[in-house]
Image (tube, rainbow, N blue to C red; front, side, top):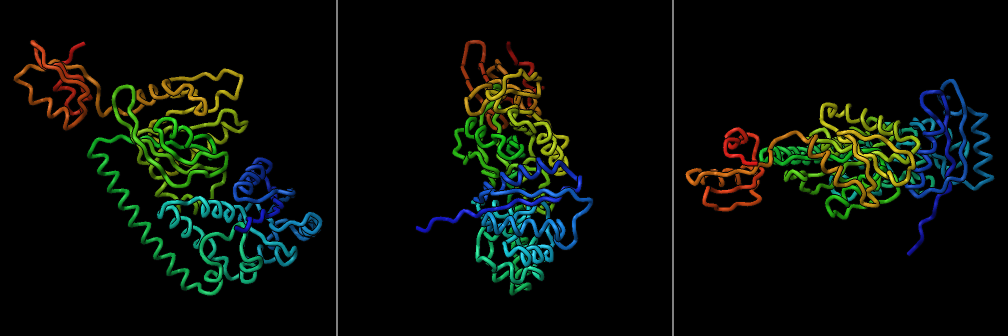
Length: 410
């Protein structure tokens, strides 16, 4: 079996003051590492605006060319979106393949997608991104015949048949709409069956999958890489008050996640928008934890999830020395060391909107028919026939709480 060649990448960024350039390039380096590239250098240039032809201007591009020749670079990764003409100009000058931040993320998505829907979403996002750039990418698409940024649909099709790509986009969009409708039916069924849903959200690599595995015994891939989880996974848990909660793991978020990528993965992310409670996982050992938490909350607001109750999970507390205060909506845990999980479950129970309540009842024998209603609409944990009546320990649906309250015992 032939070993995969690790591409030597130079990271390039033009700092025009729109965001913290150093932090963004650090994240670009993590993305490159996740895609399988080795960072051999980075070039950051302060500018007032992007150069329309090459982003960084002719002088700096000449420096980059020399650096490529000196270090043997096989890939240039730009920390911004490039136009087709910019890609062509930079490649013509440096004779090195060029991709941008979005192409890199799409490449990681292509390698991580497992489910049919995940693969369809990736291909659709790639085709929509590449279609307007095809005119200028003529030679570059086949320059090296593969590598990071080229996984996914066949490059010759992208190069030669724009009409075919448009037809493919329409077909993919139709298939995804059908899958989205099916998921909508599933959500409607869950609502009818009184199944409450908790969405685990957070910045990529915050420990969401590790937490899901710990709470549910699931076997979701949990790696120290960005976007280790792409396809949503759902598992059911029982809360301390007896209620069941369906936990859904969602794709991680990052800074400057391009809008069309959010659109492409909306059907995956909308699990969060339709949840009853959001479990927001933060890596407190990360120096940028506050900013990353803000990115997550802003993305949730864009998806229409701003009004859903949130429990904040401060993960990796074992890695910090300072004491961080917690409240009723914040839990401190270490998912890796299984610490603070009972406290987390209690706080999820307290903040989860009440659709049922656990009650201990003593039903007169002439009300024995109520037990079947309790089973039908909730859950009966224990039932005992005594000389005073039927002792029942049950999770009572909110519609029956008032009716059952007269039979409640301490």
